[in-house]
Amino acid sequence: MKKMITMMARYNQLADINLLKTLEGVEYDKLKHNVGTYFNNPLEVISHYVATHIMFINAFKTQATCNICCAEVREFAVDGRLKDEVLKDFKSLKNCIEKVDAKLLEIIENIDDFGRIARLEFPKVTFEKSLGQFMLTAITHATHHRGELSAMLEILGVENDFAGMLGMDF
Image 1 (cartoon, rainbow, N blue to C red):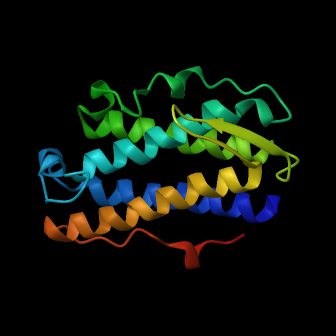
Image 2: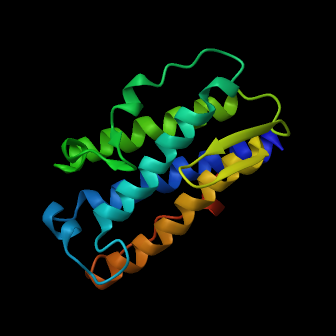
């Protein structure tokens, strides 16, 4: 299970790297344009799934076999979304995504028992699942939202194809 979850975390990182390469050439204000979807614009989607990764990092960092400092990535988000200073420009956003993806991968690489049951609490619901299921949930959640981003970018006239899993070596 560890090999598969690590592979998926590496894929998540690659897809975000490719997404960032796509966004580098786009006027940043264009990413704030409301395209009429639930999250309104590409930056709000990115804010949502990256902030969710930060929540998973904070919740499960203690499951790693070594002490992993997460203070820097914790500072990127508040109330389930990225802070305004992270979203102010492409350079800040890129820095955040790169660090969050690296931290998520570091935690996953340092978990030995993905079958161990863990707890994740929200205001009105608590989940008790295996660490493997929680990690796969975080990664597939991001994959889902990158699909949404792809459609949003198409609506905005931005060519994109940032998946790239078949090009990876494992």
